[in-house]
Length: 356
Image 1 (cartoon, rainbow, N blue to C red):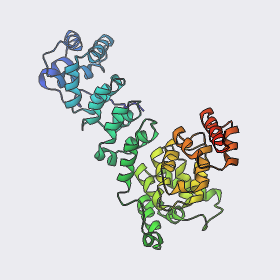
Image 2 (cartoon, helix red, strand yellow; image 1 turned 135 degrees about the vertical axis):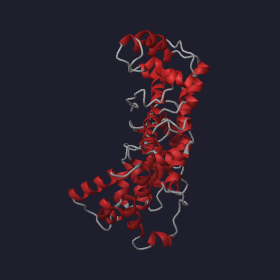
Image 3 (cartoon, rainbow, N blue to C red; image 1 turned 30 degrees about the horizontal axis):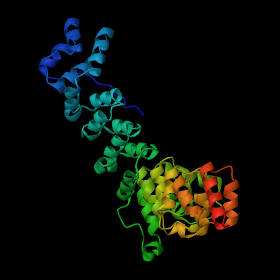
Image 4 (cartoon, helix red, strand yellow; image 1 turned 180 degrees about the horizontal axis):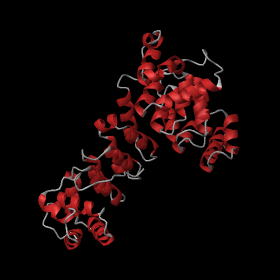
């Protein structure tokens, strides 16, 4: 997910002095001098000149410009990243400094950074950068590519996930019974989300399994096509408003924020939660959310499913072992699916209960 830009000297809006070194009439000697960074220019314009020379037809000029950009003094580099207003230059520095969180944070905070670069930053294994990106509510609302990248990055923190969920649906998490029972409310809301071309799928997306227990392959394809047209925030809203069939589809979304929104739906049922808690093909974050939900973990079947699922975070799985019946504890103690730590803890719980 690398940002990719083609840039000309005109795009960079260079001043008259800088154009002497990069224009079509500039001599090779002038270009080489500039490529070596030997210019009395302000930092951001120097960066623009060097970036322009990266695209020069002369390989030697390009090589020198590349080395100069890579070896700028730290204070000069910081100033460029905080004040430069050309997205392509910032994108280049994002690639150049992919392992430098301080520099990446400055790029993430720069309002001139474009969506493609933000999405690239959100794909990197840099927790501090992810936190910075997740704190920018304005960009989260506006950039679907950023939301996709954050949702697929395993290092994206819970605070960022919660912020995205709140942005998608700022209303209280619990819907009033009257709102849930209002005829056509979900259908109308989903039609608005999908837009006119997909509005005829709205009722199907909002339907419960009781209304259509055996959908045809063609109906399934239509449902998938409708959801595929939606952005992350729309999918999160659908997870809240839609029915069982829509939730089942969204639960398989590669974006863990979307999948997390499914288990936060006020319409989800206990049987669905049990099935999700048993699944080995579910995001860890989803299981963590179920395990931390007091209402769902009051149900024995949910506790058992979480304790026996090898994808449940270990600390939470261990907590549930003490609530299980002996038959289920023995099964987990013998299981080859769970980790050795979980199996050993199940045996210890059994021994304590048997007085040994």
